[in-house]
Length: 83
Image 1 (tube, rainbow, N blue to C red):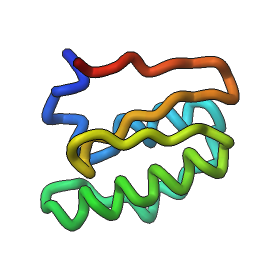
Image 2: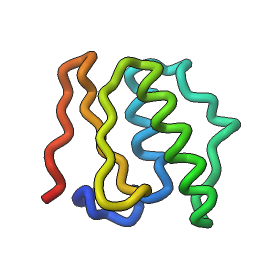
Image 3: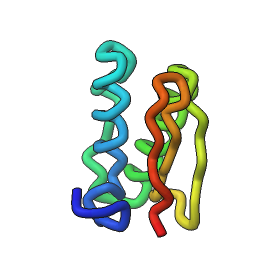
Image 4: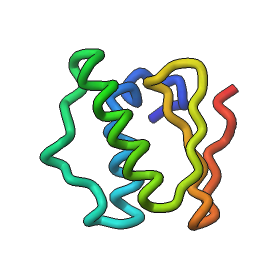
């Protein structure tokens, strides 16, 4: 990942891997799509939000649905503003 504008983030898998690193059993990887299509990306983003909330994270959404940024409040991690 070069920046938060990196197009590779659009499939949501990076954020799921980050959440999985916090709690390995929280992500059900069989539900995750590859993110080749917009609908797949949207489903991944929705699932990512659900998992993050389950872990007690605060959720912040910006400009596009596929740009998901969140603060990992439970562990004190902060995601910097992308701009």
